Picture 1 (tube, rainbow, N blue to C red):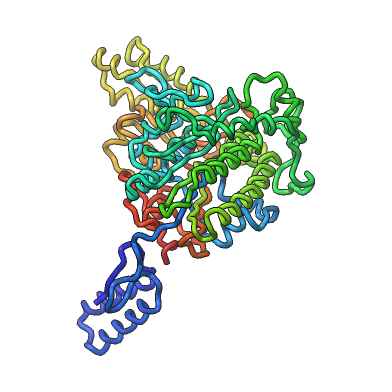
Picture 2 (tube, helix red, strand yellow):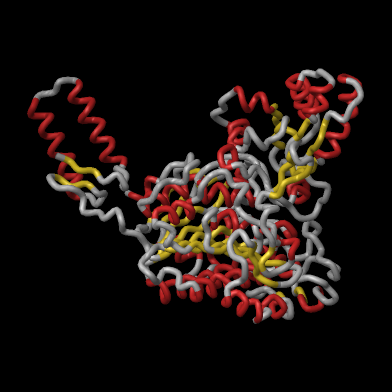
Length: 582
């Protein structure tokens, strides 16, 4: 008889043979032909290493796990950066992961909106905002009559840093994470730590049961946390903060790593599409950070330089050593999120020398980090994945100047026009309560005045659709009553949460930004420039390879669950990347 290890997946070739045997038997073939096919599949099974055996159970040990899992999210990274900057990368960073690991070349976000909070939540839960509830970085709450921040928690306070930056936790996350499941599988023995410049980039990946989540406080220049995790900073964190590394990084000049003429993958350094930093006359190298930060009352400038990533890696290395991660026989999890790539991308755009230089520097720092993991944890003793929380559109003004589709619209201004029209149609009243990434109607007023909510939703959707830059609009009723299977409407539905989303959702035309400025750029749509991100697996249990098959970003957590032989996050809707197991 056959014994199948449920932790592994059948290769497609063997699945096909199984299907053929079944279909041929159904046609009542002769016993001779039937026996020949059965012998063929037995030979394939015996010669493969997929967890099958003939006559005895699989020798795979379900308890086997790596010493450490390292999750890396590079904020705002397009998949194409791996190829565009490839020739200038060293051998030990991105190239090492690409050549020695497994790369899903066609990985995408499968919902709208593509923002930082939802992205980090989706990677670690294996679910979309429809399930995990992080529908944006901020969303408007009808109950509270204000915006809610995705990682806010008014029940906790700051530990280190400044008080205003301390009310942070993952409480708004409505699903468990892969890090939570590792904690459960090890009865709490696994150590889980999250690190990022952004609090949401740390708290959401680290999950509900983390030993620590640390983020950068730009007011004090310290790495801090909240009372959700600890009541006082560990000694090693205090020692790290005592080094005052942010001040050291801001005391230098940011020049290009290579001679600037070698940055052929980028546009001219001096152009009209990039944000000009305060005290600069043009967005050009070099950046004298000491001069630019002179007189500043905080350390916010650090985030808009590659050295914000350097600080995060410095802290990750300190956590690795001080917490002895991967050293005690129980699998630990270090979640690292690099935010400076996002800040640089927003300010300078995807075609800038500044962005290219940031990635070349990150590549070299990743190389050093991988070497450190080899030394402290052991080569092939750790499992690492790298992805992004979203990608980014080129500066729309650049697109327009190049005769490509793109442009700007301001939904808040459009909503004011629609609000005036609604008074003529439905009577006096402030029917629209809030408008930004979605339109929120005043349900209390509508009910009080005896109006039809669905009629008003449809009216707003139709009026919004009449404006240039809006491609599609849908009402909350549309999202709740229909099941969409393709296109922008499917992506919007995967981002729609019954408890938290608004009344009218919209998708822009390609290349459009909901913005009032023509320099710099952003993200948030369901188009390839925002959804197509890296997906790399490396190290323990990973064979070199790649696939061009479509992969959803929500497949990462299920893949990790199968590799670690632990339970899936409870809201996970993704599927394991089959090719990783073949």
